[in-house]
Length: 315
Picture 1 (tube, one colour):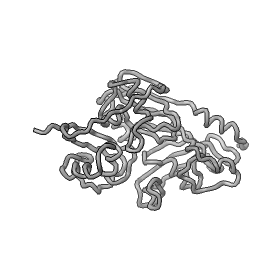
Picture 2 (cartoon, helix red, strand yellow):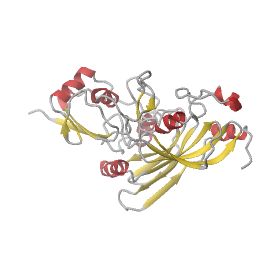
Picture 3 (cartoon, one colour):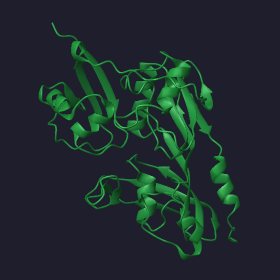
Picture 4 (cartoon, one colour):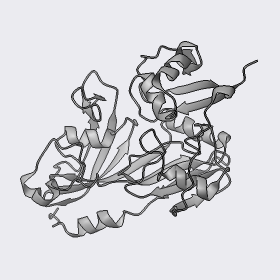
């Protein structure tokens, strides 16, 4: 009798063909192998059988059953580089991720990730709900986005936190420096997003896309730039980056989203060292005590130094 190991993932904004999405979760497998899993009904999306060309909407629950005898063991090289731990107990860890650090290994990036560091510091004490390549990972942020990320220590905590993400009860607030001087003090960007047909790495606003809602408020205005706080109602891939680019205020330093060049921000226009975007606040309900928890991470030095070089505008 064939034995299976079951993996369950709550997607965190991925919108693509299911077989392509699963390649990121199983980087050692070929696309044809993953297509066979789907064809053999080893994969479900929200409990239902689908085809390999099914396009995910970014927040479904995907379950995969893999024959244990055929599984190619995945080894993650531990990395002793330090972690900035904001909070830790028996159920979860809150990490302040630095800019430039990829969250988990992938086909093209097997080492030097946050997961490699987690494996060194916590060994086998993290959840495996998201598979062996993503121990403890409940959600993620982009490589060049710094800030708070929640890590689950066991599968029970992982499932509770993942459900909070699905129910939109886990709050994530970001601080961003955008090009140009935004006029209104606050606003809502309610623009559906889809993958850009001309550049598959990007997302763009389109009425036929997936619902995406970002609330923002201005913290401070500078000559040629605005510091904003952005709160997500939805969690689409690149949502904040794509939304501010869509309204003509791309995030400073973003090499991918560059729709607008602002004459009063000549030096900022030339920055392409990664987006100045920081996951500054996170609130959630503790998976065991049910206590509401709020966390805040200070702005990284690089962002603070850049702000210090700018000229504030009078209110």
